[in-house]
Image (cartoon, helix red, strand yellow):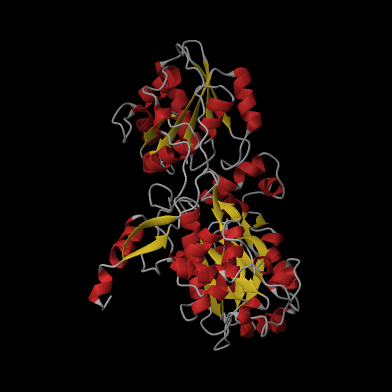
Length: 103
Length: 441
């Protein structure tokens, strides 16, 4: 301001920020004691060559931890959509999951 | 977010693998979804385009964030509970104060800038008096919930009141008589600060009597910074989006890799209904000519332009432009009235719908090229493989077979410009919705 007296005058203004949603804490699933003999689903969100990456994860398990069974599955549609059908399938048939590469 | 659902809702221990540039975004999303203890690790960016050997090196390498082996973090994430009580880190009851702590003019400007509440250009401080003047131009109560907004599908909605919209409108320098338009934009729930790595911007088209009531420009320079209403309504839309959705901060809540200059003003203009030879855009979408509306497009990135509609090769010129567009973002034709009339002369398109049909039939690409685009791989191919039409049928085409790039309902035509010449352009973007301004008067 050109008027020096105004430069030290305090003023009141409104906050422009919206109201955050109330956060509901979510529990984690119990972790596995061991991966030995377990079935781990590798979930491909079909984004930016993520499937190619997960194949390398699958190969890693086959070579380094052969007792772990891996199943590579693609999400049913684009990664932006929920996929309860796939999640139910994994819940019914798997012990754990790795999703990648996320976005 | 899918990992959170699979872990917490379905009870399947899950680890997510992300690329390192998403570190802050992942922390923010997991915290806002109530699961800051979610297990994840990181590999280097990018994954796209890497060879099998390079990807294997990622798998066998270390997280660029923690410095620990990626697969060790994956296995620990499946077998070990999270360390520490992360839930204590969450503030579950949060409210935004109505006022900012009082301070001097200079200090307040500095605080708004430092808090990422601006678009980094100077703002008008939202004093009680200025906000009250803005609120006087709507019949809605200041504390009425005007809507909810978020930056993308993975973020939670934030809520806002009419007064909060007014605060942002003041900051943008908007005149109070523009407020119903700004309220309608806010209430649409469509963010002008969407967080995509593709750096999208929004585009706003105003139709109906409100255009002239508030002096919007639909003629010469309509999409440029030469009209107060166009400029400040567009700026207000950007500011309200970022502030009411909980932020738009690079690397945290905004992931646009390159950014987008269109985002400064959200390409805001009025359709030149008076000089258009066709039905106004809002009437095409179910409103009366006497209704005032705003139409919102998102995903504005790619633009092609040319001059005139030439007699001999206009079809080829348009096809070339369409082939040069991003195949994932459908074309919206922004035509100076001169160009619009030329399209009638050349193509016989006496309605927008006839022109749209021609574009639909002529926006073609060999199937092999189409399916190889990364954006098509990311967003269309998955839908095609699971049977969604028309994509599933396109997937059956031989690689050299010409297939249609877009659906007819994705293609749009808007008339704008002052007839200083017959220039026109194609904006690659996605039409979201047309909403009433009158409801917010």
